[in-house]
Amino acid sequence: MTPADKVLFLLMILLSLAAVIFISSILPGGEAVEISADGKLRYVLPLDVDRTVSVRGEHGPTVVEIKGRRVRVIESPCPNKICIHQGWLEHGVIACVPNRVV
Image (tube, rainbow, N blue to C red; front, side, top):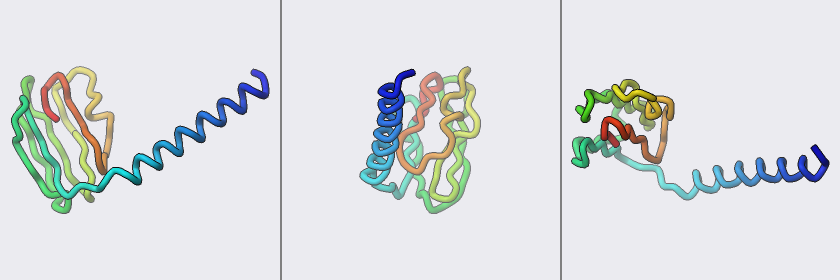
């Protein structure tokens, strides 16, 4: 690894961190969570009320938790559990593609 490689690597890390900070600052904080299943809106829930809801998807129920103005999927019948591994989100999208829940 040459010194130029180290500088390039450090520059890439700094640019990545700057991009994350920039995107976080321009995305507005939401006031509600919209949950859809099979392309149909099932719930519109406020972020300021902590609750857990179960949404029936194509392969079974997906359980969504809202707590402290954040959202996460805590249970899903999908095979890879990518939606669960996303963890808590303050803004953005969580999609369980196999179960068709967004």
